[in-house]
Length: 221
Image (cartoon, rainbow, N blue to C red; front, side, top):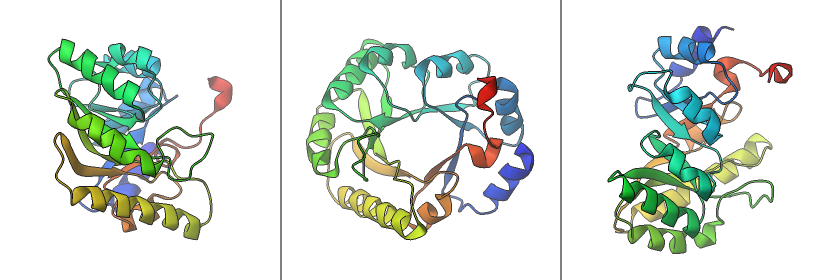
């Protein structure tokens, strides 16, 4: 199906409160423009260099999401360019974001990434480290936590649901507490092959790449 058809199909499945992020990493400006023409305004990028190369090609109505791992030495490049950083995963990164955004008198909206499957190949904190991370975020003036993000292990529907359910419990648990600078507005989880399950477990941000743009042709990259 075309990009237009894919977007129309997905939109019919989404509750009103859900943000659809089109994962545009490795995609051309022309492909992103097609999605934009169908009303998509939230786009997700994994790499800082690729993101900043695309931001100037679109108007200010586009909300860019950094969904990949963010190195501390790359933070300075995204100040003022990113709507939401999904991948906060260390105290060192928190402090660097706070410093860079404070220097520009701007606010960084972020999600804390949890490595819910405890996979060595993925970034993110373990769930037991969340209180320490949130405590550090409370000290910030220019960094605001807006929720949680997870990339779950690939597996069966039952396995996916187990991880999504666990994330929902963690998210709701933080919601019940009174933190400074921290609100649980967003639960970012679910991708092309599992977003329907994520929605059933209260995800209100899903990140869909292949399901919108089709399979990548890596020979062209």
